[in-house]
Structures are given as C-alpha cells and as structure tokens.
Image 1 (tube, rainbow, N blue to C red):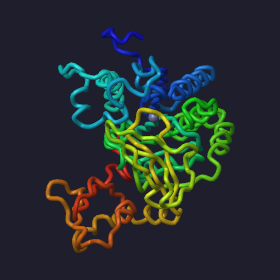
Image 2: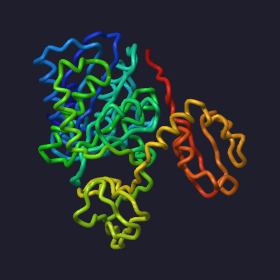
Image 3: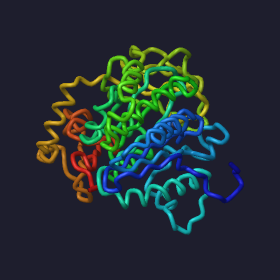
Image 4: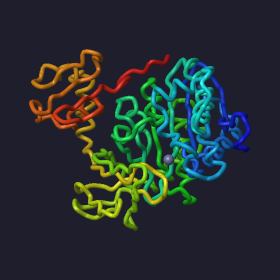
Length: 387
Ligand SMILES: [Zn+2]
C-alpha cells in the first residue's frame, strides 16, 4: 500500500453476514503493525468459514488494525494505535467530521470508525469484540479483560489464563473504548511475535469465539482441535490480577535483563531491568508479565498475582447483590456529585479498604493521588445495551 496516497486502507479482511438480528463478533488483528500473526490467523479462519459455507446466526467481521504500520512491519508510525482511543481522539476521527487527520494513526482510527460505528448502530443482539496481540517475550498465551461479569462469562468459556486489571494501567485502548459502549470484550496475547505457534493459538481462539458468541455451531467447526491447541499452550488455566506497571517515559533508556518469560515467578527485590542507567527491582513477589524485549513500547513490564477462584465467585455474588451501592455509607467514602458511578475515598479515613475491595465490587481505579482514591463503577457490568 502507498503511504502517500489519500485512499483509505482496506481494514476488512472478511465479513460474513448470516442472521442480521443475531449477535455480532468483531475480531481485530495487528493493531500493532509488528504483530503480523493476528492478520495471518484471521485470514486462516476466514478461509475455513468460507470453505465450509457455514450457516451463521449473526454477523462476523475480521478487521486488520494498523495497516500503514503493517506495511512496514513497525509497531506504529506516529502514535500507538492501541493507546489512541481516548474520547477526544475518537470525536476528532469520527466519520464525517471535517477535521483533517494529523497523524498516520488518526487516519487508521478514522478508517476503523467508519466500519465500527454503523456496525454498533445496527446491532440488535450482543456484540463481542476480540483484539489479537503478540508479545516480544516468549511465554504462554493469555487473555486480558476489563473485569465485568459479562466479560468474565465470555472469557471463562475458553481454556486460557485470564489477566485482570491491565486496562487500569493503560490509557486509550481500543477494547476499553468498546467496553464502555457496552461491547463484551476480550484481548488475547497469543505468544511471541514471530513464533509459528502464535498464528495457531490466535486461530484456535477465533474458532472458539465463533461458537462461544453463539454465531456458529460447534458441530461445524474444528472445536476439539482448537480447544486442545489452547489448552496445551496454556497449561494450568489461571486468573491473574495485575498489581504493578513499570512505565517508560519518552526518552527513557530501558533494557530488560535477558531470559524472562511471561508468568515467570520473581521474588521481591530481584533486578529485572535497567532504566536510565539505574537498576529496576521487582517491587513485590509475583509473576512477571509482558517483559519488553523490543524497542518501542510504553510498558517495561507488569507484576501480577494469581487470584483464588473463591474471590471471583464472591465478587460475582456481591455484585449481583449490588453491595457497591452501599459503599457511600462507610466513613471516608462518598459518591461524586457529578457522576453517581464514581466514588471518592478519603484514604486517610478509609485506609482499611485496599483497591482490591473495590475491584471485587466492580469498580476500577481512576486515579490515586495524595490522600484520595477515585474509583468508578464499570459500565454494563451485568447487562448490555444491545438487543
Ligand atoms: Zn500488541
């Protein structure tokens, strides 16, 4: 494709419209241009759907992400397309706005919105969105999700490890944007960028998603094979909560120590990297996640901890009982005057409520400044807006 032309890049890899009143499944690949496995997997699954001429009870869209970056094999051109979905950017790049795009990624976003907006506007049943990624480090594949009960119910159908809380650490991801519109979302890190197996795990996940979204019948797709591929790559299926992010600012020189894989256990104090000539230690004992072994990126690594299934169960019970509604009666906790879904916690008074309690009840962190924690209830936790 030609970078200098004004023509739109083609993002639609395949579209299958069965019953228009059924659920919608949208899968994105290669939102990062150096992650070619996503698009490759979508082509592979599209070929299977076409060949088998499936009867679909809904709509399926396979979309390529950052086409200008894919063309040159880089993560992005001007700005990370998966940190670009702030409200301000989306409004600037909506179809028919007269604002000319500034960055290559503004054009990418405008082109994707041209596909997404009518798709969401015409949805008459649940909408599912999956975003396929890969990592610079080796390691087992895993899913990421905003912790709503609807996202959980979908993720639990796959034989994969799920990482909670990553979206609190990242600003402007595509799935966070879609999640706030009520879409059921699942991110998937399928393995190392260039490993042959990564296309296979991506394709397996998408195959199962066609079935778990209720659009295709399990009898018509190689479901057992897909289950086996994911289960074998995953090993023991776990739920892991992100607790710490090592950020990288523009201009920082960051180098991960060699040899770390996703989900390696690290002890507190272990030197994991150097940043601007200083050693970076693990701030607590836990699992190292997405250690950065490539040049471009804003996240050096994350530290996570496994969550016991009991907490997941308890949290479901508490949310269905709407226990979060009772929080403002506690000392030091008050509801924001501007937004009923936002709580402001005076941490000098309510110091016995760690962030985990709010996670349990379906809130996410907005900001944590001196003396004050601000959390908001995740939208569309139990019920979606479509249909
Ligand atoms: Zn990525």
